[in-house]
Length: 156
Image 1: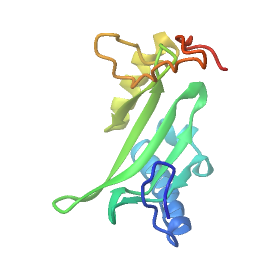
Image 2: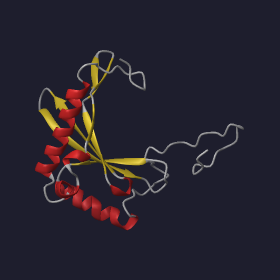
Image 3: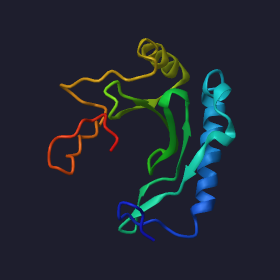
């Protein structure tokens, strides 16, 4: 089966891997972020996605995301290596002040999360945009049908 970007998605394991991804995310947050995220994110807030394969090889492990207020997202997956086995990876996805992109920030510990939230407080949960080194993966403006430049804030 082919995914939206032409990648191969294995059939038959979607429901199981999705449920496992949601459970793994909820358990990791409960264990590692007991005094912060576990108080705000419920088990049912997680939405899982199956592993994605490309050319027969696994490209991405199954993952789960949870929407947070203010446009922030949590993304959880497992990083699997022969040397270390499986380890949890929790990423906070923060909207950029430019309004056209997001910044991904891997959270190692609850202390890192609390420090990051303190840094985001002055911008109301937005990551500061830097034109010199754009780390927000800003979406480029799409040309209008007439061929002229399109305002990034326009919807149609």
